Image 1 (cartoon, rainbow, N blue to C red):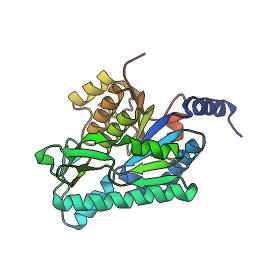
Image 2 (image 1 turned 180 degrees about the horizontal axis):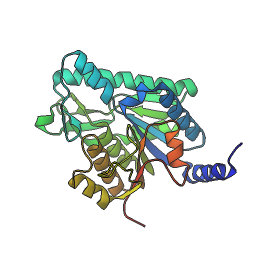
Image 3 (image 1 turned 135 degrees about the vertical axis):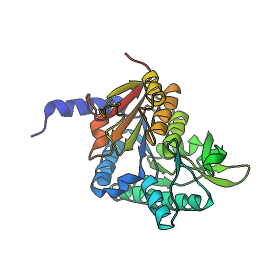
Length: 275
């Protein structure tokens, strides 16, 4: 039997967000569970059909690390960002191509709306020498995305930058790239799908709501570690530049609908300030 209260609540949020733009960030690990991937893709097709504009940006972390091990290369990270030498960069680009094709394919089997963008969107420069071929975004060609949205498409973006001076492709952390794209598009929400429930406190409990100040304290105190650091930092930067909300949510079945179309939500919501 349909829960009328839940249905009314969902319709309220659908009407509220019609014609708004959301960024959905996928981790590469979502490909390891086809049931979840299909469920999340169904959520997006439904929201797209309801008039909510979605842009997907994805990483390929698990796929990259697995491929590196096959080539007897050891993955290394500094504050959650992958150290990328020449050999690793080649693996990164191939892995991102694979993930982009997979996500685009799943969406298009449900509804022919997805368009893959694997490069050309981000201009970048080398971030730090110690990271190697890792890019810091210097410009976002957001008009490309806006044109696709206006033609009723759903862009699927790889976090690849190009150093226009050197002509060199650069690996950009997907969480960082998502935040830069969210800022450029001035989206209403950014949803980061990950492999944990959300942001956790020092006892492992889920934090449902964080302000910018709270989020900065969590990093400073060492509560947030490894891959969660760029997620939170990206969220803080995005919210500081007029993105209304950032949600960090576990990539489970119907995770997007559960987070966006219910009052309670499922993960961590990061906002500018309390109140």
